[in-house]
Image 1 (cartoon, one colour):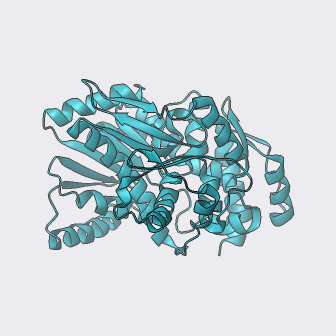
Image 2 (image 1 turned 45 degrees about the vertical axis):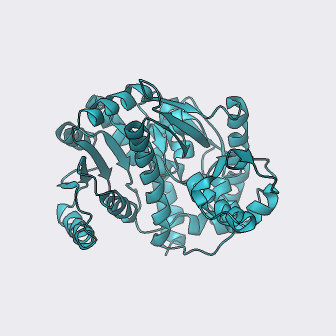
Length: 392
């Protein structure tokens, strides 16, 4: 597996040579459909968009409505390819698909158990989402195993609980995704809404926010407007200067009403889109772009990350605004609230508090430590004993 900077520079060469850039979307559920629509809306003829899944007929229906809507908007300039017959539970099937389509980007938007927001079960009962990590990791694990076997050099993005999933893969010695989507990107716009209103700022893009936190704080701040006592790293700047604004007040203002159904996946799809567009924009304009991404470089939690294409080569690196170890420690405290004590040596380690809550609420015993090789067994336990019983 090549390092991210090598992959970024391979992409740079293709962009500069005006070669087709292939973006593959694995899984065309609500996240995948929204993402495909957003990418089509770029009206970019250099993009080749490949949707990958088992059911070609179902994907064709979804692609046709997106193509039709884009044509009405006069935006259909990208090639769209449907790649059916790919079984995400079969590594060899994924490997064959990767060899065939030769992607430059891979977005994993697949879900092991579709049609249910697990958070509707876990937040009200556990106030923690990390319990579902064994479910989140399985299909991504298969994709990255196939990725390595195929000798793939695509920039890879994972959609499901990357705060723990990407470091779990890395800690087991596997190939792992370059970036995760979601979380911080969901929270930052809420902050911008409040700051713009309070400071009379017309263009939200003029507000520069840098935030360090894991998935838990995206949820607790957006739902309840506080940090559960954890001191996060947050910077809010306008025209390069730090704004003198109370961060606790900003957090409280983030609790804005939103739907709890699949429409929420507009945000996750937008986070994937932001990473892809940020990389393409940085390279094409020879500038520097900041993104926020969980799990980047196999680190636990969520981080601000820089794509720097201002020089002769493209570089990706963590923001120098904060010390790396300080960011790691904040994320450890943040994800602990989500039920994850640690990820190390191929093991995901649940907190004792989460184990007790699962026993109390659902009468189910989950193990303290889950090795990656045992993730499927624990995922089956979660599906059969918790989701099937409580998710109807």
